[in-house]
Length: 86
Image 1: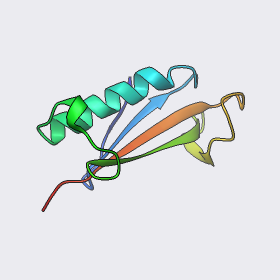
Image 2: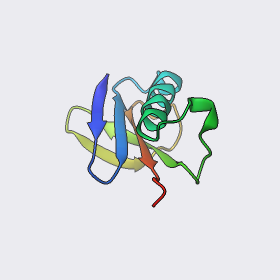
Image 3: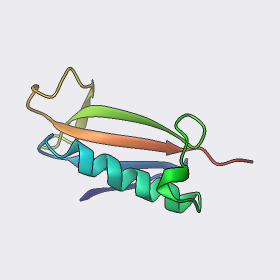
Image 4: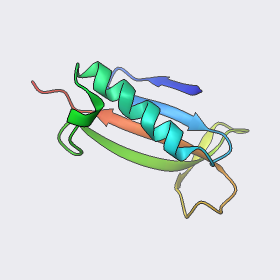
């Protein structure tokens, strides 16, 4: 799986086909839970993380913005921003 993390706490994963979003989402949430030292079932949206799924042109390495639907024939860039308590 293509992806990585940013110093800001964001985790990003790429699905070049746009057909494996469920797998990508699961993997990103597992990574978010690990970074917060929690179980995946303990994560609370908008408290522990924020998410966005963008259309992604993997040939040009550019996001074309928020996806218009799953029939747009592009890949997906899944971003999870981990929110750490201070």
